[in-house]
Image 1 (tube, one colour):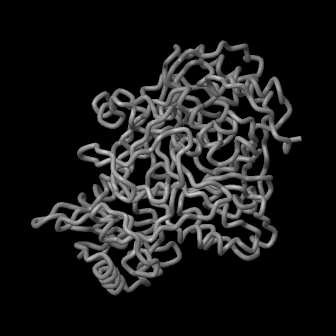
Image 2 (spheres, rainbow, N blue to C red):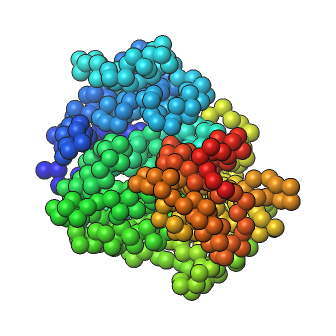
Image 3 (cartoon, one colour):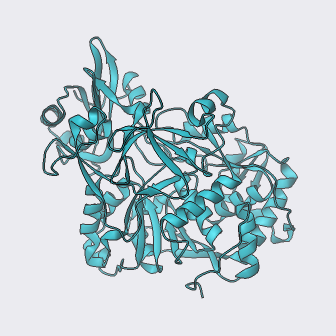
Amino acid sequence: MDNRRPPLAPAFRSLPEYVHHWAQTTPDRRAFTFVDHPAPDSRGVHRTLTWRRLDVRIRAVAARLAEEAEPGARVALLCPQGLEYVTGFLATLAAGLIAVPLYPPGLLGQGDRLTAVLADARPAVVVTTSRHLCEVRELCDRVVAVDQVPDAAARDLEPTDAEVAYLQYTSGSTRTPAGVEISHANVVANARQALSAYGADAHPVTCVGWLPLYHDMGLVLSIAAPVVRGLLSVLMDPVAFLHEPARWLRLLAAHPRALSAAPNFAYDYCASAVTDAQKADLRLDGVVALINGSEPVRPGTADRFQAAFAGQGLVAETHCPSYGLAEATVFVSAARPGEPLRRFALDRDALAEGKALPARPDDPRAVLLAGCGTPAGQQVHIVDPVSGALLSEGEVGEIQVRGPNVGRGYWNQEEQTRRVFGTDGRLRTGDLGTVLEGQLIVTGRLKDLIVVDGRNHYPQDLEATVQDTHPAIRRDRLAAFGVAGGSGERVVVVAEHTRTTNLAEIDVPALVRAVRAAVSGRHGVRLADVLLVPPGTVPRTSSGKVSRALTRERYLAGAYAADGAA
């Protein structure tokens, strides 16, 4: 029954209205399944909500929230990953309140961010679960535990006339987290755009995800898109994936026409950590799309993942490099499933000068990037970041976006809203990119650019060279950044060593010499400092990306002096 193509839904204004529609038309179909892994060797315990049950739970929790807060008030979601999170988020929207997707206290490395976001959003009430009641009550006087609200509390709700659905706080990779105002219209539009881009509007898929639901991609791909299309969404906890990545692959294999997304490191992690014994019973020929939204997307990652799982039937054309950001709800552009990965070898020196010129793929000075396809239901322009003039194909500039998915602005930040969202409806992303052969190519972050002797250097390009220099350097757990020096900007690299290597076992001076030589030879850059630090020391954003800005702050504060070596 669950494999049948769901009937098309009429256009509704909000996600709760879509849930109510599916509850009336396909009440017994599965809507959301959460797969828990309570023990290290657990193969997964499944809990499921049908559309009818989900609708009842939403109406019950929404009624309870309406007793605690006035329309337009903020509601912080401090739930763990699971069905209660889905219910709490949708119930907040149904009650005409503004959701603030977050996570329970105690998430490793995210305590300061949680404090900052709560101080900025000033929620009237917090939604959590019984398990986290005590710790959450220390943060807010009004707390609603989703699992303690009885079904009997459910009542019919009028469609909300509120404009803002939720505040999506940015990951904070280049600045203090800011809350993007995402309207009901924004999230419905972006869900439809993503469904169209990945072919899920024409063919049924199963959304399988472990991305945190407080992250923009996790929220849209695992909640919004399935709700709009009436698809089954299968969820698991990010920690369960990190403990055993094969769990994610098993869920992909177990569900027909699976669609999923993960950051770059997850594909490399699976390729290196999943054993031959774990691969033995995997069949991945039913997977239709694997989304990689990292910046930039490098073809080598898709190649390593494909080589690792081709024997399990994985089709190369399932890899879909994509681009998005919180200010655009999430989705902007994507390569389409079923199409070969588009690869571009670009001249590094020309790229630093703002030109995307082809190079031989085997040229050591070539930068290899993947095309992120084309947008769906929105416009993308490449403009000069200073003059705002439109640039021609092959010229590198700021990526700007216009469409119904672009958020309303930043919560309580008028000046920053004017600067980023502008008055012409065009979102200034702060990301650099170009268009080649009709493909959007993301080259880096404008604020992350390192300028040495008048030449631009992309930090992720330096990082790629560094992590390939020595096997003790942990992939995707390093940061290159510039710091002010007496004669100009100095370049610093802070890199974690692998978890399987003890720092005492590494010839650190030899490693540092190798890193300096590689960066000098390939990029013409002299590194002022190279620090090798323990795993978990380089800070990451809420979406799992390395935070270069925070790494730089910690470096300047001397936080790495005891661990590193220059």
